[in-house]
Length: 266
Picture: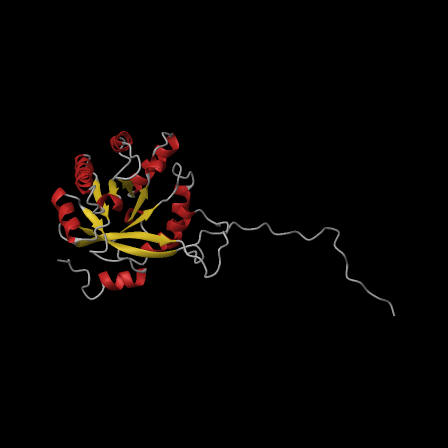
């Protein structure tokens, strides 16, 4: 009996080019996100929320794994996904934790995430450390100006620790590249040996921010004394355990936006 064989193609099968992985709105293996309520200190009404993410590791595993995305990109994706679930008047502040200058692809990634989550860009604040804002380059200035013009809040965070440069603060403000400053929680620790110096420094920073027309924020409001002091010196917004603890987004929404739960605290 004759044996027939399937015709063999002269050309080898073509391999499909791998597609670029889309930005993910969550990364279960790298972070567990929560929201900390941020209040207007003069009235104790809710102003918005600060996005917090903490690294997590599976029990019994101590193996360092190469991250698929830089931490700031994961924060950006997760934060925008969370912002999409919040009421439109609630501004979400995202920490862009990057040890060097602002990443070149920050705006590109932000645009991609916003298109995926359908979040209005003006509902976001981005927090940068001094190292991210220190580079005096055209790329940095153009990026900050583009974000500002789009309605993004630009916050210099961590003031009161490290070696913050007042010249840097002045230059970024005069160029219109900052909209707010955020005091580090360590500045408000009630260390008896340094409490007076801490109060003087805090008062000076808040006054400086006010004179520059910036929003002034503080974290670490854990006592009535700290709250009273910040109110006295005119700090505008803040968060801390006294005002409300961090919660996952569903619980945050339930606590502050349902059944009249966003009432002012006293």
